[in-house]
Length: 143
Picture 1 (cartoon, rainbow, N blue to C red):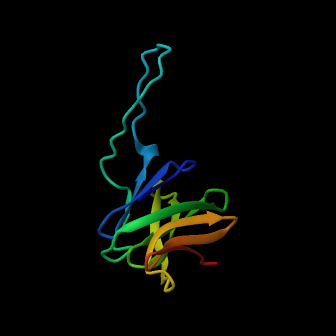
Picture 2 (cartoon, helix red, strand yellow; picture 1 turned 120 degrees about the vertical axis):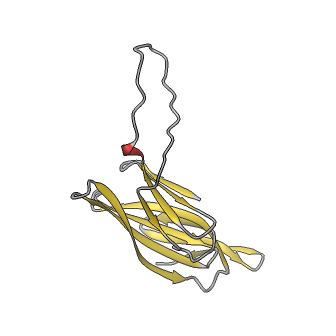
């Protein structure tokens, strides 16, 4: 799963091994223009992550992520869910000394009422997760 935060231009990608990688699209080279009126389409190849959370969801798939801005975009909150049954919250802050963003895991907690978490949303400041309890899909307000 992945989530993109438009203001900071950060892309977060979860993998099948429980890791979350952070990519900074601001560090990419802008495409050059030949002066024509044609729209420029660019494919940006991001070579390496600017930050990684190893085992954010143990060794299980990261299935859903959402980013919310705190403190006028100076601090971001990344909320993720995975097949480990946990909701994990991470802090993303700008480090002015390194001139880049850093990501740190804040906490992780099991959502015991759902056996398999697949989605997460932030609605009016409330964190809602979706997942399965047996064969039934359910929503759970975690706040």
